Image (tube, rainbow, N blue to C red; front, side, top):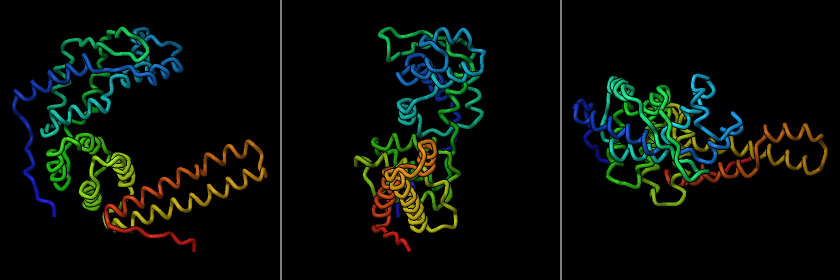
Length: 287
């Protein structure tokens, strides 16, 4: 059984809030990047690669949504927050106060652009600024059992991305979910090359785990579902190879059945999780 670590209380010190305010301002000023996929999305949606032209039409809802996307905290920012502030616990009122303080003075962002050598200078729109702060989820309050897991993780810098991922997971967190997560964190070293894949995969499954469900039985039920999907996808591919369907019908069917490789990967990940977390897995019978 893992030891329990002290859980920090809510942070109310004004000096810490001021320090966090300065950190948020610097992130917005110097750490926003317009990467190539966003440039491509901008060209497809707006017919331009010049984001400064978009800012002139920031009142348009589609443009405003794109600017909020541009100023969303990426994984680097989320991890940096976790490293610097993840041990603190802030109340929702603190978030509102930080947003109010940040909007008192316009913030000019120096935006790095993948497709040009010279960065852009943009004034951060109010909605984008508020969205940036709220998406960091600095007022997240994990349940006690998960908080103990997080306190243990903070001793290992390799788990910073893990802590960031847990902060941004949209889960209510009951005991069985925490138990499965804890088994993964103790059973798989974060240095292993597939840790991030397994962690992300498990998070995607946990919302389906009921509070009264056995975790191992749950994993095997998921594997059985993937096995059934694999059979349907394989049967479709056989029909496709035989040339017995019209092309338009095939295109729609392929989307509904998924790919054979995808379902095989899902089954392999279930086996990897089951062995790492419980020491064994089970074969799936076709009966």
